[in-house]
Image (tube, rainbow, N blue to C red; front, side, top):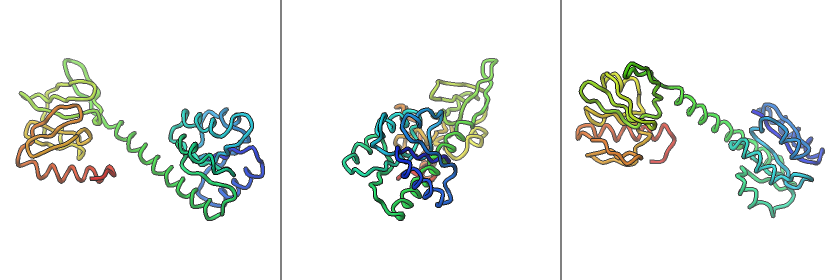
Length: 242
């Protein structure tokens, strides 16, 4: 984790660095005396304490550019003027510290920002893990890579598995039981002939599952109670509201 401090006043830069270093969980701390200096960096900080009133490129302009380059950067404005608070949130600021502020307030905001960074990192890792899960399918004499997360649903027909993905349709010879086992708990077999990815479920009832692309998949009556329980577990894993 890299924490940046961008302020044209050396005294403020030093004061913030001392406070961050004293916190003891902050990783690398880097200081910049202007927006121009900050924007020469190839990679933007993960957390940035940013003054608004600076000569040259001011804090607002700097913030817009930082967010363009790294949208997950956590911006905390540090200023003596409250009048900029609404502008600060327009550029996606995480928080706004008005000088002078207490140590207690500073560390409260720093702790929240670090927690936000850790949560963002966890989400990114989960997305990366999903994108890395795939299988190679042999079809029409060629092998095709199918990423699990792109599969909307699967259908079995005449010993063939048909995968309906966000990139088109893929057919291969296989067994639905083996596919179920391979894809895991983010998928559910709603019917003997169908397997659905929870990610793309828009709504459902006892007769059908309605997907985000407008298609419907049959729901077998005996599968419905299990589907509901598994779908709720999926929501819980994903941190969604029911």
